[in-house]
Length: 575
Image (cartoon, rainbow, N blue to C red; front, side):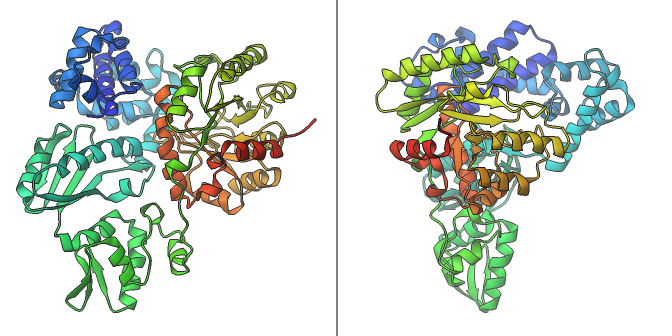
């Protein structure tokens, strides 16, 4: 099992314990263990196979070590299964409501007997929630807004969570004897920001053995339906997955069909009809004769098109590009040379300057910017001018002892609610790199939001606007931005824009990143890492850029260090 999956189950264990009112030290132990596991540089499976003593890991005692070994070796934790049975499913579901943590959920459950999301909505609308100690009218209103957001989005999961389980299952099922192909399809393959469910396609000599393996897999909670060639299961993370076993001659057609999107496939079918062809999940047919279907390339070739990358299959211009031979060579993770947004122990990170630099170097990066928080972010121990200047001196001192990587003195500077920046211009002028962001006041009216963003864009010391909307996917709506005005201002002032690769942000989204590209606004893809493993999310930022149709040349931090530094100097003020 991947570290992220183990960490997620330890976190769920802590949540359920807290809802039950367990000892706070015990709850904290599981949360700390989850963080330790998530930040490991080695896989737990490898460590356990090598006989490593897990109690040597920070915050992991004998009992926790035994539970982790159980999780990794048999794929489930009996104690967690028991907890799930003790806490109603609807109560656990309340943790999906933005702003509701385990403590508040426990209060709602124990004091108001709220057991479902519907119960929660009734309690909030009736005023009962507002009467609870520690809640109030503002919290009740926030809960109703959060429920509305959930209704709008449905039950969807971060692409990172979806990929973790989908790729683990893809790998494990491919090991079943007689299995020739297994591949992920659906929105997960298209790298959507979130996925509602998962699709796996397979070619196998023995469908029964393959389905038996999925049914018994540690990640599978329950088989929901099973036929001769299709099986539907519910996974332990709550997602549902469809496995379809198809003939080898139909594998490409099935991949094309089940990858989607629906809008893309409508155009594919229409183009086939114009050629007197029929396309479905079984193949491409002229009359009743199959003429293609074994590969996706053959399917697209049958309608006169080159293969179209899955990330572009949304009917947003990909057909015109394909027909004219102008499909872009999309950016790849290996193209990234730098990362310009990360945090250290100076604020809310878990690693030192040197540790972050060395971790970036290990991942093939050639330059980074250390961008700890400015003072407005008090909960993250944000830096005032004096601490920041001392921090920059420390960055300079450490970077002189490093080889193979360049470290920029940066800052993630808040754009305050009144439109000013969190640090004076004379301080920002000393930075190598300034990324300005919205963290607070995201519900302000559009006019005020735009005033804040435009002030930052016009400031000569601001190099880029980071995670522009401030959204948190599935948890918090972004600021109300007039994107036409915002993007034009960025283009006019030469201000770069960030795709924040954190799977909970992915901000800019793909649509606005494509619009920025059309205006020739330079894009940076950043991890916003808070630990040495935080760089691993860069792949999700690259996925977002690919969905926007971005090439490596559209992303500034694909440049080699000398070219990047020269490009940065060109856009910064002099004197």
